[in-house]
Image (cartoon, one colour):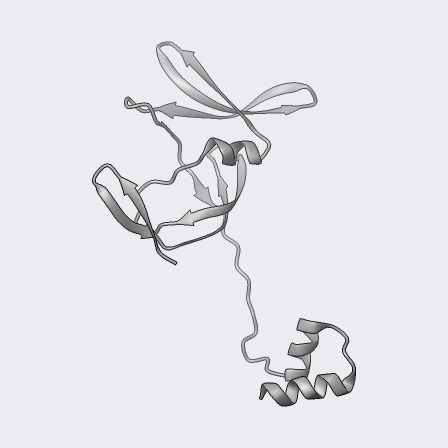
Amino acid sequence: MQASVSTISGSIKTIQGFERAAILLPRGTKFQINDALYSPKSPKNLLSFKDIRHNGYHIETISEENDEYLQITSIIQGNKIILEKLFTLFFGLYYTRISTIEAHAIINQKFTDDFIIWHDRLGHLGSIMMQKIIGNSC
């Protein structure tokens, strides 16, 4: 899958796909994003308010000594806890550093027993039905 993104300088094909992503913010706040867009050429990542809310967190802006921040908060046992503080850029976007949480799965590609493969896919079928399926799949 490839998709285009419209930017101020025109449309570019930068989206290579989408998948679930797990990210970690600097203070340890974890996010699970179900439909994260994969764009390996993009120098920046965007985190939407919707993604923050879907993970059970709240958002608020604050000002301290002429600087504006975006805070990600959570209510724990009735108390508001500040989890992250995102700094603002001069043109209005907030920024932070994120890390990806990697997970890997290993699959044995050499396992080719047709009976076991079809059993895993379909469950407990009768032996005659299994023989027909295996016979027709080879």
